[in-house]
Amino acid sequence: MQDVFLFIQRKCTSFDSSKGSARSWIVQMTYHRAIERRRYLATRQLYSNPAAQDTAECVVGSPTTEDDYSPEVVFGRNGLNKVVEALSEDQRETLRLHFFEGYTLVEISEKLGQPHGNVRHHYYRAIDKLRKHIFGSKVRVAKEVEPHGE
Image (cartoon, rainbow, N blue to C red; front, side):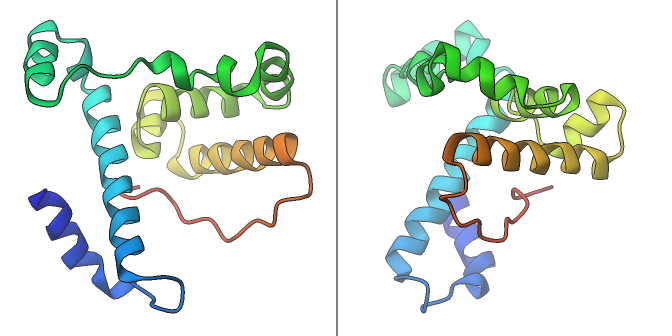
């Protein structure tokens, strides 16, 4: 909780009251910090360590299964194949490492031996292709901001 409070204090200049209430902004910042922390711990394989898992269950209860968020459940088996075929190999690997393995874009560039700019390019092009494939031209795209810490 202290991490979230410090983060909010550091980022308070980015709050814009014309875009929403302070309460919703704080909830959004807390959500993003929680997701970043989960990715950080997952990349360091905290969740695969049995001793740490037992400790975590004592503190926060039993975790939910990741099956609920699997790509097959989200897109359906046939839909997933169509989405994957629309991406290049570099784009697929970048998204896999980022979303399913929890790596940051900087870590992915090191792991794949590619410049950070190329990995960012693969990431954003893949996201754009997925968005267009899933939603078509119905969705208006706001300017994307690079994920925190990259």
